[in-house]
Length: 314
Image (cartoon, rainbow, N blue to C red):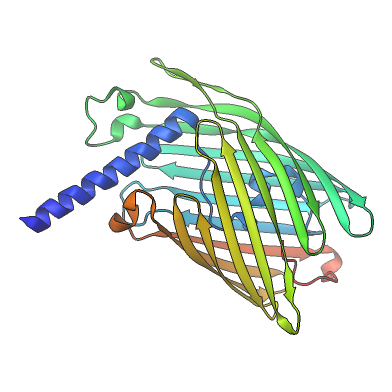
């Protein structure tokens, strides 16, 4: 009897977590969460396009709150490269995000222009254009019958948008600021009318050599995400790079999760990474198996030549 009650409470809390997420998506189109945010820069900042001086392809998959039915699952793909003039960068980014009965798919084209700042830094400005398609089959949710918030599906339609950003970088440091969506599209149903939220991202990080420990470097990174109608989110990460081959580190996300990350530069042009984060917000960790994320990044260098700085850290 006690075990039955425990399972009932767990299912109720899991359903509550899911409904909260679905409502946030339905009301504001909240941005997905990424632990490896440094591998997903192009999705939020178009000025990053071409910054690696290679044709770079990155694919990423995230399964959040494993064990909770309908929990978020996200896939991203980014492709970017410098053009004939190395001051120009071109990129393409796509994302699919599913939370329970809600699904969002988006695709954007990114253009960037880079200008040297002295001998050390480069400044890039970028724009992006594209849009997203979303569908909320809210009536499929079980356990919320009679709730007006879930009484109506939202039909799929295309929402165009544009974004902009800047990105300053050197061999050992970077800083970016961006607004990936500048248009506040109206999300209308037969019963409600609301606007998409605006989101701003600040990202920074670098590589710090460890003096006499020539085989070890520290790789700190931070991102602040400001979204209208939501609390400010801060993401902190610290990796240790060993022999430019292996990475191990930890992360913290404000009010949400802590976790660990590992990475392996299989080749100078090929990197594989994995992370696991453990939710502590709302004690949700008690009812799920954590969140898993994996990515694969491939760089195709011009004329098959490896650049002077290998591997590229960001």
